[in-house]
Structure formats: C-alpha cells, structure tokens
Length: 140
Ligand code: AMP
Image (cartoon, protein in one colour):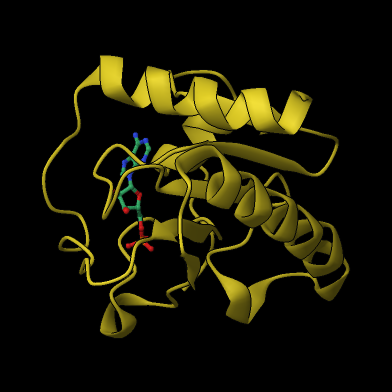
C-alpha cells in the first residue's frame, strides 16, 4: 500500500481543512482528535508523509517522539491526569483509520475507561477549550 496524499491529516497539514491546533514546529503538527477517547485526546502528526510507522523514515521518529513526550507531559498537567496512554495503529487490521502516521496522546484518570476508538464527535467549543488548556501549559 502506498501513501495517499488526499488523506484527511495531509489536508489538515496543508491547511485545507480546519483543526484545533495546539503546537507546530518544522517536523510535527499537534491537534485535537475530533472523536476523543477521553478529554484532552491529542494527535501528534509528523509532516513527513508515510502511511504509518511501518513505512516511516526512521529519521522522522526522533523528532516525532520528542514532541509526543512534550505533549504527554503537557496534557497530564493541563487536565490534572493520573497518567497518559500513547496509542499508534498500523494498517486496518490494527484499527488504523487515517493513513498518515500519527500518535494518540490521551490523558487518563484512575478508574475511568477509554471511550471507543472513533466513537462520538466532540463539540467544537469543547475541543477549542481543551486545545487552549494544552497550549497554555506548552507556552507557560
Ligand atoms: P487511527 O484509527 O489511529 O487512524 O486514528 C485516527 C483518528 O483520527 C481517530 O481517533 C479519529 O477520531 C481522528 N480523526 C478523524 N478525522 C479527524 C479530523 N478531521 N480531525 C481530527 N481528528 C480526526
């Protein structure tokens, strides 16, 4: 399978469709997941095109996971979470639904289960507020 540049995250990276952005640098864009599995569910997306981890340039992974760590620490603080789950899916059999490499960063709270993957759409105002909370920690 080859990379398809018409996937929805490629469109977000090109600014063709909107997202609730929390961070951007030369290598990575971070925005809110529109169907969060919990409050503060964030996606860390490298700008370099690949379907997933399996065809990614190894050189892209260091910068990607540096930002994953930065965002994990920020969401834990922003939401007063007890922990953080990191998820990353590769190909349909694994549950991947968008074919541009991305890492899920999800704040976790003792005793509270994750909501279903690609479940319910969150209200835009809630996503905007949550993005603001994370930006405030990253910029603080
Ligand atoms: P995966 O199944 O790992 O490919 O995850 C794709 C994720 O992207 C899911 O959690 C979706 O809720 C999320 N998603 C789909 N479309 C958008 C979008 N336009 N903006 C932000 N997140 C999205």
